Length: 408
Image (cartoon, rainbow, N blue to C red; front, side):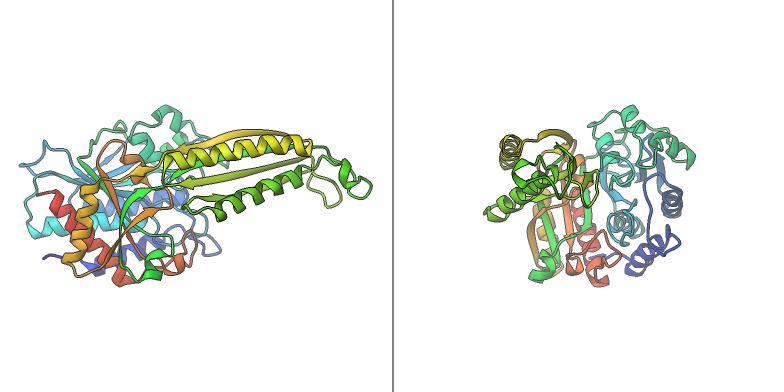
């Protein structure tokens, strides 16, 4: 049984993790930024060193492809994730899956393994969605979920335009998105949650991924003096917003389902200590692995907002920011992950992914699945994000084994 080169994999993870540090030492490699260019350059350099064909599409998605004369006409097995980061990030999120994919291909290439179909590794653009919206944009465009021209016209939080920024950093490629039609798609990722560590399980066989509903709520009331306006005579947008937060929290906590609800941002106007808020604007993130339950939560929220507007004397408007249906991953690939774990003497656990991933988009066009490894403390999107080296290598070997099975 062959295994990946552990030292090469770990060294590359740390090497890439050093690129994009700001003046405070934070890792900030936002999509299409100069720091992203530096990370992309390093990754493309490794692809070329490995003797892979490098292709870049108009979305800036990077592909390293290994074809042989005997399989050039076959659809490839695609391994992917992303190398853009959030602000003040850890070094594993996304990057681990991309670099482990490259490592799996290099290992098979060096072993003289005869493949029935090509292998490819992808680094998708703007998975995190920090600078440009929506997140998972590169894989969404590749899967045909958003038109390329619409995506390239996205305006960032800093006023930049994605297409112009990709051209500026030299990663506005020539290939049309979707040019590479995968036979199957695999993504290896840190869990970004506490389950595997808590249960002492080294491998997660991810069988589904939660649906996501993002909404922006605007509540309009009346600004007035905080000291002279009786409580019974207020039209308080801040209080109405607080009631929504409490409703979502209490409903999700009381449920016997894995539904989660989060209010992640909120701002008041005029935002003064002695003025009743005239406006509250906040975001809601609803997630559930089953579409019918996600729809039920959206309906319950809509009903609550309607009742609240009447009770509080406020006006409420709702803007949908993003909506992705739950994904059921390919059962055959999930079984291969479990079998690979057994053959390596490792325990695995079937899991739901609570976070969105590129696999969520790629499952639209190919059989797909994900492999998880533990995250220490369940921490991610944070410089304290950490996974033991042995766990990183174990996950890469499971990826290698599954790819080997799929390619024979």
